[in-house]
Amino acid sequence: MATGMECRSQAAQSDALQTIVESLRVLQTSVLLSRIMEQTSDSVILTDTKGVIQYVNPAFEATTGYCKDEALGKTPRILKSGLHDAEFYRQMWAQFAQGLPFKGMVINRKKTGKLYWSQQTITSLRDETGQLTHFISVSQDITELRQKQEQEFQLQLARDVQQRFYAAAPVLSGFDIGASAHPADETGGDYFDFIPMADGSLVIAVADAKGHGFSSALVMSLTRAYVRCFAGLQFELDEILAQVNRMLLKDLEHGHFVTLFLARLSPSHRTLSYASAGHIPSFILLDSGDVRCTLDSTGPPLGLFSNSKFSLPQAIRLHPGEIAVFLTDGVAESTTPDGRQFGAQRVLDQVRIHMHDSASNIADGIYHATRAFVQGDFQDDDITSVIIKADRFLGNPRTVEIPDTHSSIREKKKILIVDDDPHLRLALKIRLRANHYDTVQASDGNSAIVVAQKEQPDLIILDLGLPAGDGLAVLERFKESDTLSQIPVIIMTGRDPQFNEQKTLQAGATAFFRKPPDVSELLDVIRVALS
Image (cartoon, rainbow, N blue to C red):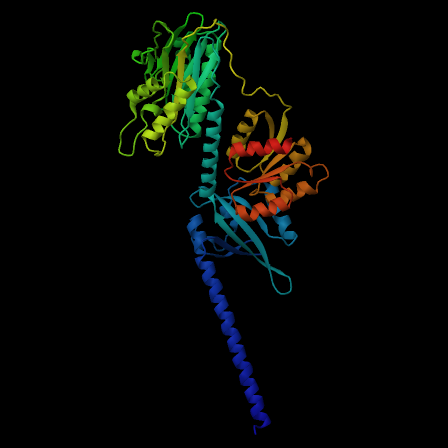
């Protein structure tokens, strides 16, 4: 039998073995945690209670440009961008004082001076007695994600702007007028417009602002505004081109330009006059289908030369059954995968085959013919056409009637836009105001509460990733307020949409959109929410 001493010795050995096992387990855990910290793609900073950096991981070095030796002993102020105000930092420390982590979007500055967007979580660490010992920050560089979201949003906005400026075909006695415009997968700068004149004639504009995206859509809207302005002053077509050219010279970047075809259709004289600034040829076909004449350019593109001159050819009398065809270059230049272009001849053949159809059907048919020709391949330019048919059976000339596509008048509603990105706020403001909404803005959570209480908006569009006050927390404050709780709130975010959608809807949001939103769908939701 074992003696008492032997039993005590065995127990001591067992305790020692247990201690060694626990130590090894702790060591393994420590090594594993160290590997996680060293290998994670998120930047990690550990500071003491005074904010002095004691540890940074390799991802921090890669993101910020500061090596470990440069960061240790410093404070996170080395990353300070100067773009956040004192209130932002007061809110951050208020979170810590309540024992809560800070979560938000922070704009930091790299060692090179370059700004970057960071999704950041800062947590206070305490020992077993509850004493504060450290702060740990984990952040992710989301600059590329935000830039991508902004580009996609601006592209969607450009499409919406472009679609809004496609005027409805007018009703003009003695003529059948149709138009078709199909923006490219990347928005270009085509537009067409119909402008009724005081003498009963109709000015038709077909233009192509070279380039893609938001900038070309803005150029298109400027061009349209200038044309309408100078046409309203009763200028001749060549003088309209000269004046628009003068204005665009101030607006366009070097090397950018606009081609613009202007025609004036007189129902009383049944004549068509035109002037063209570098635009591709237009055509007038006889009732037999043969080309009666080609309407070539009468001057250079707009926005290139200050001394550009434009001529005004003699007006052309249109006879019953004749067809005028106005195009942009995206039609003829539609290209198959093996490099063949649709070309002007195929356009004219398409018109000849369908010349007894309505003008609208001819215009739509041109588009579908180009898409069939390229076998559904990527569309890299807008495809726009305007068709004018001189009726075989003449009516009495009368004033032009333009269908009113925005005739409904409603009381203006006020919408609060809460987003820290000024470009997105501007884009939303433009789109909302174009749809007859007033807007007010806030760039962070704190100012959102202040503005909402002051302005009492009818609806709020709220970003989740705000620099002062997490968007979800701001939503909860809205819903807790006696004066704001009934206001519909639409959430927009690019962060973890599946998780955040459920949380925000449970918190009382009316709708949830992932950035960049489909603006048409967003407008539909706004209309329903405000009805």
